[in-house]
Image (cartoon, rainbow, N blue to C red; front, side, top):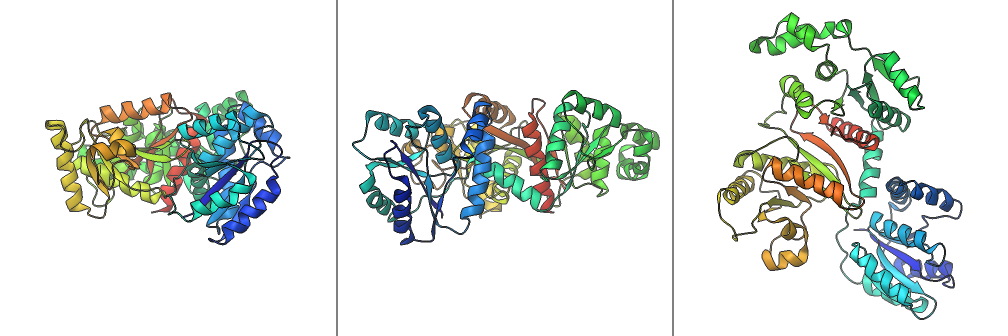
Length: 486
């Protein structure tokens, strides 16, 4: 496991170059070590400008990507932070964001006696879930570094910045064609342009070309020459009519019904996916979840051996990325369906490089509560343990017992999941949807990616109608990664 240490000078008198060099030498006695400079003199003005525009998440994503590329062979990395005496408010903010983005342990370093401001900063960082090893003077850094290196390495977290960066890298490694049925919708157009230009996927817009170009022009955007646009009309749907009739003839499908359905862009895109002309579909910025999912269930259908589909959101907190399921699809799952949701969510976490410790959530922890709702979770847990003994799972757990170690020690001591869950399975759609939106809208600097559908034979993903452009971009990336796994 990689150890990352962020050295933050608390005053300009700290000799940061020599401090980095001596820290690196000490680190090399414990493993393959390197240093990393995220804020160069040349880059800092641009970074500060982006921060003032509210683009801090993108800044950290780019830094996380650079960090990953430059330190991939290192087991220990020493990172240079910004001095608190240079633009102190900006420095404090950037140092905190950096520590969270790189899951770094912090050493606050002073050239002289530590100030009250340093004491306050330590508490502030710890409150924001940054691990502060110590407040030290320059000559104490090597000693504190060595003390920490002798301890067992903490399990790394996948921060928001790291997760977002990894999505773009993985999607871009093997470009997939992703159809966007809502091709005239402004956010979708902008997301398609970004995905095309950043080589995340090969987007295919469905809609009237002239209308798409007019919308792009109104937003000062230019449609790239190579970005494919397919008109949605009777002619474009004609070739899919025989297949659609054959697929749905048992349900009364006729040529006339098929002709009318294929005038709808979601049905057209779904048939393109069925025929292998595209690799995935993203819709929902305008259409309801039902309008996006219904054609997929009827045409794409579930994967082999899968009885039901579900969904997850990737909840990207600044310091870690969690999986929430099911918050978008299944209203009132029975025990077997709830076990399926948990298994699918566990497998999704692993597929995207996240830890997989599954908490079956309830209003009760362990044996503290009784009733039908608790019995449902217990039954699902028993089914899951029998069918998938490979999954690390526990329940029923209240959210605080699942997520917070101090609470878990009191409510569920000895649990392999309580206090450190990474996959949260809600007992019903009501609790799941409310919870993800509460976290997304109320907690600071949280980004939710999804919903990502699980269990379909081919990747189809639904958007929230309140989706931002970046939400659509990352859903395109998710869909492309799903397509790569086929």
